[in-house]
Length: 186
Image (cartoon, one colour):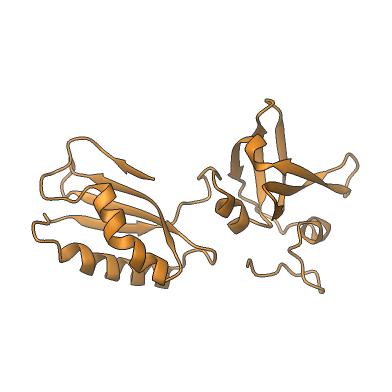
């Protein structure tokens, strides 16, 4: 979970210390710390916290988390000056945990399966360690739902879409409301 760049400056907390100090505060706000990086070999040193939650991160939330993290980190006795960055994982972060798939429901994903095959589809519901993936079925506008065991996925990355998703795909993924509009992610 935490990564550390070698040669970090004396007086900066370790990634593990940052995580331990901030995890409860982030959890109270409804977010999890995905990763912490302490970079001490730059001027000024940096502490980068990657956080995520079921509702995603918006600028107001990032600002609030940054303020509370800064207050807690500044209270450390021997803390050296640093730049704090609180950020979201970004769309290019590989999906590695069940919560990542849950949060990406309705999004298009490209994945590599453990048998070496590749698959592109729209993330649907999770059920008993398996992911329902909506994939194109040959002809234009036809889709089927494939059930993929999570432990059978080697790599999965959300794809950026520049056009609105197909209504049928969203319905099969369980993400379209009665009027066909994309529902808020739960």
